[in-house]
Length: 605
View 1 (cartoon, rainbow, N blue to C red):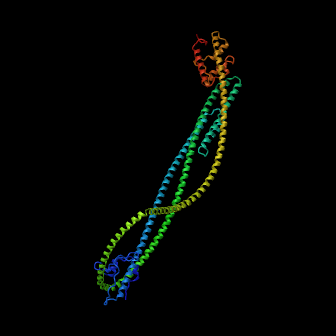
View 2: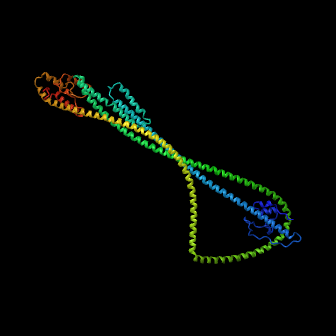
View 3: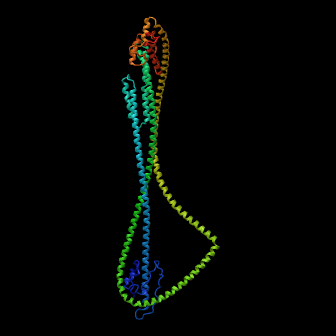
């Protein structure tokens, strides 16, 4: 009976020549016959290029029948082929697993590179955001410094306005003045622009200043209509100088305030432009940061999906390995049973070794013959190749044009197929980008709606600010009109002072005959005139026509003794300004000459 191996032997992976020899317990390949060293078959199940299967041996009447030997040989060869096919299949599966792992490694490397790129871009964006926040903080600090400087200027302006105000104001004026001073200081850090605050300061100054000249001129008119007393003459001589000084101070302060107002408006416009640019940059960076966050979330989602797929594949691989280990355990059990069976067959194999040796001798002779035939076949194939090359050259010579056209058409077809594949790939990418852009467009539409609401609010605020600006411009126009009125009144006063100067020149022209009269005996009228125009010898100073407490006390007593007919100087005052002061200096020089005894002045000869 035939003792065939267990069918589990066919499922064992890659049963090599050494493993079969150990199972059979046969000697080494050097000592065993040619039948025991069969080369393995290829994975496809095709017969190996090794020695052909053994030829039928002559019958052995003493050992076994011819049919039993052939059946056993066929069974053994079939089992070996099945085992080789199983081993080839296992090799294919392992190769497939290695290809899968290589593909997953490539994908993971790409994903890791994209993640690193995204992290680097996020880091760069964070650095840019930090730099912009620092710039914004610096701009805010500069703005606070500018606001502090404006506040200091407002305080200085309020201080100058308080110092330049008249001392004889009513008690209500000082109480309302600090309120005007405190208001711009309080509103420096508020939402109102600095330009409007400077406008308010200028308006308050202009409102407070025009009241002073009106009161002065009223007091002067009252003094002119009053009887000729010493207090009326003192006020008439003092008020023009005070008015001129206050007007000069007001004009200088107005020019300084206008310059400061222009500078503050320029600084504010520049700060607003910087702030708008920084806000636009911050909004742009926030949009880019949100886009990168979305991309990072998508990458994390794809990473999680790939991790899930990898875990599923790992589980499948583990299951496959478990099944393979179970199969190997079953094969080990079958191998133990095969060992027992092979022990029984060992004796039979020893008997067959001699026959196999003879058979392999025959096979070697046949192989030598086969090698000789193969050499001849190679020579014939070389000759055939030469003939084919010559024929191909002839064909190329005759059909070169057809080959070129065919190759060109094949190349064009290949390029078209390649372009079609590229277009399909680009279409897929564009489709994905279109979906992303649709999502971004929806988000941008929502943001646009929010911005529209904010723009409406800002427009309402701008309209309110325009109304306030129109009101401020109206008030400024009123202040300019008042300043023009003051200028006209100043021009009128200058004309009056010029008229008085003309009268003074006429008086000086009349002094010449008065000097001739001094040589005669003095009359009572001449004595009064001499007291009016001659300075005191103790002081040795000229007649000073200027506003001051000492000059008023000294010269007022002299003027009280004279009437309007004897001393024409009571009819007017000196011209304010540098021209009047020059005339006064000329009068002083003449008085000094008279006191020193110059001829013509009635001094000692």
